[in-house]
Image 1 (cartoon, each protein chain N blue to C red):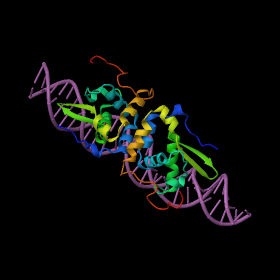
Image 2: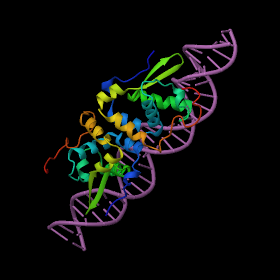
Image 3: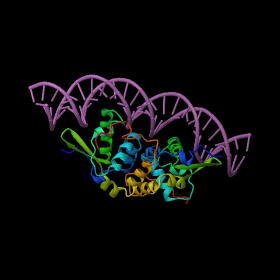
Image 4: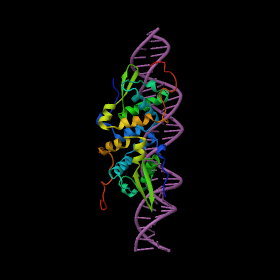
Length: 118
Length: 118
DNA sequence: TCCTTAGTTCAAAAGTTATTGAACAATTGG
DNA sequence: CCAATTGTTCAATAACTTTTGAACTAAGGA
């Protein structure tokens, strides 16, 4: 089962920028980039926002074409759409991730609690 | 006379992205980039929005640190803050401008009328 | 089957941003 | 001085976005 995603050519620059221009979503993207290749479920982001609110932000990221979300059981596996973003907007994702990596003001995933599992 | 601008280190990534995530402002930035070095006055952008609305969008760009605005007579001379943006977020401005350059959906400066003056 | 875990949906409330018009200020040219 | 040009401010409104809680669905394990 796959949720609705834009095709690569439907991805819009102003929408991507607006979606990344929110600290919570930028923190999500930074974390996805830091674990690139490893699909994350929504629970990984619970120190950024409530479950309901995360559902909202993750939908925004998916609808903008920034992330890909795959439903597996009751989970959603979330990955960056690096290939499509690089094709559409070369260099953009990398420069955003690099800049976000330096940003002490952004909220952090994994500062709150349990690094029980790896 | 200079209007209030953030210092280079006060420029915030999410704020810059949010400010660029608006089609009117992105069109302004694309036009500034296409004439880089040549300071533009507000009137150059009148085919994007009303005078009042432009004042609002140009203030947003200035307050975010994306543009520099210098008051000269009754005019405002507007330039991109490329040096500061490149220092803070290397590669970001270039990738945004390149992507915006391809974007047929963005509004255009100079499509409406008078190329009377150069 | 029943319970838990994982996440969505919905409607409401709160907050923010964009757009408008009318009135204003400041500079410049006649 | 007067009028035109250039742009700002203000208050109102419209339009969107974010956040919330309660209710819900769907899968998986005991």
